[in-house]
Image 1 (cartoon, rainbow, N blue to C red):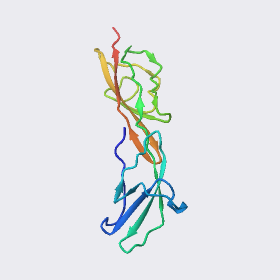
Image 2: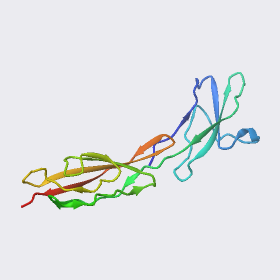
Image 3: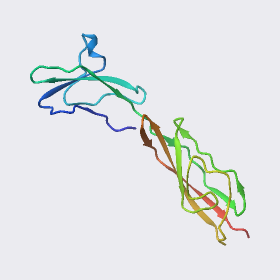
Image 4: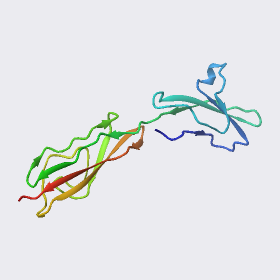
Amino acid sequence: AYDNIEIYGSTDPDQVVYKFYDQDPSMGGIDPVHCGPDYCPPTTLGTSPETYWVTAKTCEGCESEATEVMVTINPIPSVDTTDDMVHCDGDNVPGYPFTGSPTGTDFNWTASADVGFGTMGMGDVPPYTATTNGQVVPVVSEVIVTPSFTNLGVTCTGEPDTFLVTVNPTP
């Protein structure tokens, strides 16, 4: 999913006519795909990146050279679901590796309580020793994992995954 993408001209649309091309118009014989102050190209994740060219023509008839515009659609990243977990105080836990798509997705997480691995981090939850921090009742930590993907300086964030880690006290 992505928002509509529009390419806008930068001057008064009443004074200038913009022409949008899907091929370099300097090659000759190329018709514009759109004329107007803006254009919503049909670029999708499957066709990205695509190149367009834009010219501007004034009321006096002067037309600019074509400017190349690259349109790139970044994917919305996802994180695979992590099951809720229950541990005993003092258990050695191997950590929680996060997976998702696309390749190169980063994972940031927060936890509502420190049960041995802290309350925030980037990447996987590292190995830890489960703890109730001296509590004589189970300690429940809600962990929220948010995926993000950065391409060409633009970061897209996906829907988070939430799971619970319960640490039971030593009887």
